[in-house]
Length: 147
Picture: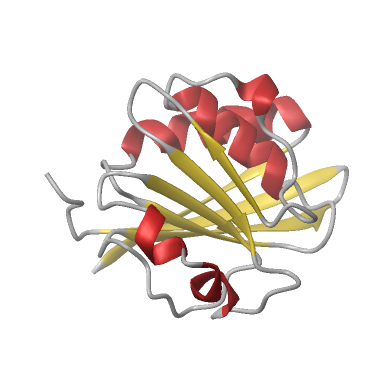
């Protein structure tokens, strides 16, 4: 069973605030799969997510060209991945499964539905344009993350 929620976000600060809020609900080793068109706010949300983990939000940049960014936080490492050019299975051709541990956080832009993700706790977030802002819809799994 999963829990779904939605919220209208009228500006980038609200998108970052949601990322921070959801980071605090994410167990150690949690994975987020982000969906939304170019410019939908996925990286903006990730900036807030890192801040919610206690990291420096200013460090977060779009991983579109770099494919992967790694960030440190008091709660652990955050791997911020973009599969736009690699496709759903492309990340695993990079050896990512050897680098991401069960205690690391993973945020994946342009994610499909399959992994292999390093944890059973996999949440989804969709960002869609809506009027003068965006509509965020997310689903949190009931399965606990690793201890």
